[in-house]
Length: 223
Length: 316
Image (tube, rainbow over all chains, first blue to last red; front, side, top):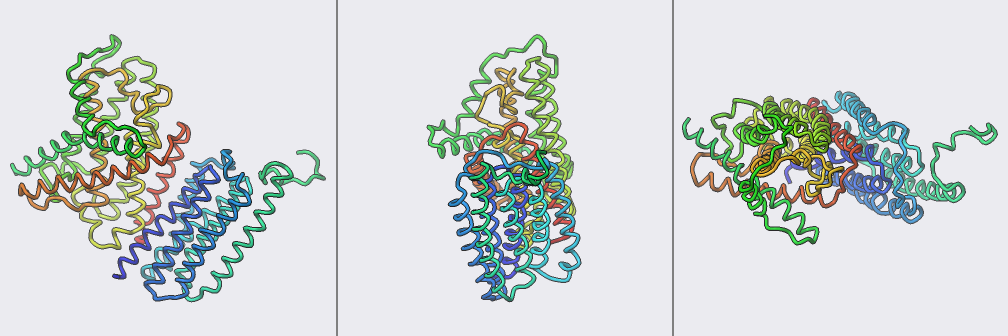
């Protein structure tokens, strides 16, 4: 296959990856957010697969497979199984900042990402030039999404998206070792188990996972 | 020059005659996929014929604007057709009379007059519809401008005939993030501008919820036919801009030979059919947004367009 076609398809995956981040920022339904996360993981793995094909790298192939298994299958399955009720709730995700404002901030974050990545990307060709700015933009926007969400589950999904974005930039820069991806995937699964159990416990005790309301200590008295 | 003028007229005629079929085909596809018994794709032609035969009622409150608006909105998409490539890949007589920004302004003129006419008839729902369409257009306008900026950054021009040569140069430019994001933003803009789901329900005629349809509430007979026909042409023109200029400039006639043109009509129709399938997929999988969520949808579109521009500027 011609190398420029691989570059092209990778760029396509990158563009769609960035779109999932924006849609996540604008989505108000938890179930929709989870679906976006799964699609994002698939795009990440597509990018890894294309790079594995172009660079003949077994490690990247492994990364692609692990990403699909861990992030597109196991983590969503686990979250749905343990917290099914929270996903089905038609309650909208509570946001500290309105969606249009968030989207404007997302523009700023992408601009910063492209600006920062420019000197590095200008020196390189193909994959890094596309993946680095997109991954960086995803990283910044996910951190922001994490900050403005009130409930535990959407926050956790932003955290997972942050992970995806970091990897999206990471696979292009350091494409030689799959070991850390295995570790990170396992860690992701373990963190998911812990968070799921914790959220379920919180939800059973107080009927909601609105962690924004848990900011004060009881000793401080009613706020 | 004469032949190029003739071809321009042929282009306009193609859009005028095929637009109702395009709309009918989208409705037919949607209803068939949703398991309903669909009217034939030719139904819009029957509707138009019926309306042209009917008499017309004009409110005593209405001024000349109300009477002239259907003609203006009918002529506007035809004027845009003269500027964009419909069947040919080589520039025609009016090709350099205006660029994509100009085409946007011409379409805006039509929207302006239909909105004025909706208020003019003093029907309360008309005013509601007019203000809502203005809200949507107001939010769509900057997205259009950003898309044109992106196009001019990539192709160094906003003349449609020049732009369409740009994307097919290599796979790398075709799949570039700026191009993909640009195309996505343009699809969302097409949906919003033509009152399709998720912004507005084209099949629904519920006064409180409708946006686009309420503009033509007061029209009847031939005027209503013109307004409907104009809406169908606008959808087709924007789809053609998307297909022939921004994304898939293939299958156009490279010479003014009759055989090439006939082939181009077939190929362009096929492309439109594929785009109709895309619209169908979007419309059957999404629900209509609540009115106050529309700015969020268009905000996401705006961000997509801006990032396309950023990616184009940094050439990544």
